Length: 141
Image (cartoon, rainbow, N blue to C red; front, side, top):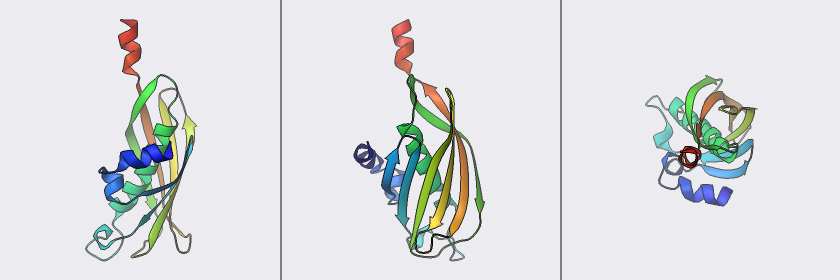
């Protein structure tokens, strides 16, 4: 599935950001992203939206790889992020893990780190609402 997902992210926000998927398994995603000047805020520090884009993308990819039977997709219903430090160059690494896999929701935690020293930049949590497989309704009708 990782190769299929790599192709699918091309031309979407994760692809535009250059997110590289390293590991995609049910319940777990590891990825990295090189920092570019356009990912910085006008003050020269990492823009918060860059971190959120990386973490939310990893959690979303993980959610897709972890969908239970009868669910065809998902949508983010809540997210939260706490920032501890920043970066100006180099690369970011993200480790995302499923912490709750329910019938209608999943909760994911992600840690975003500076790749060079493995210091945590941010802790991220999101809740995904799982969408019913519409084919079930077509078959039932």
